[in-house]
Image 1 (cartoon, rainbow, N blue to C red):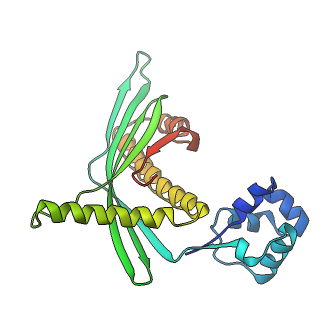
Image 2 (image 1 turned 30 degrees about the vertical axis):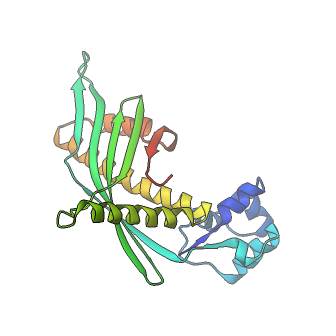
Image 3 (image 1 turned 45 degrees about the horizontal axis):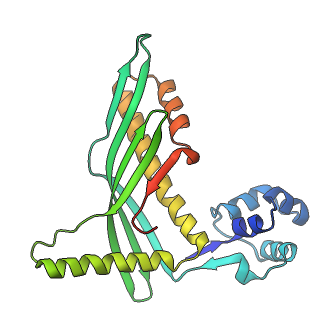
Length: 224
């Protein structure tokens, strides 16, 4: 998997994408897609201009790991919400709870592994939004306890090795991809639940803005 390392390179130089745009003539839109790793491709001329402006080579510009990974998320339970009317007949959302299954597939040279994680998500109004991820125990009832423990240990060791051997930039991209997947899933379930229970859309929007911002979310994962 290849990612562009531009966000890290700019941060190291205390430079913004706008400043780089002024220095190179590359559009802000192009640089934004490169910083956020959403670009589908990049021209050699663009790479050349950025390398010259930052004093780097292509090896610094690109960040490569010998793995590809995909993520899939599905619900293990229906979303649970504590929504009440206050004395002014306004809806108050006190809590959202959701349990999901996160499947992460990791492939590489002679490697193909699938890992299942249980995601427990909880959001309490104006207090905290948090998700906790843990390895999901597989059904290995046909194996004795010693073999089961060995299998679980090998699985955890492999995933930890995968995560800790990729660059910091790829770790951040991994976390952002995972968190975006989880939040999008919960938000969609939240909106559907609120709609089916005639909760005003403005209440939903306000709650999401107040509780689901990046600075509002805490998490615990088994590989950090």
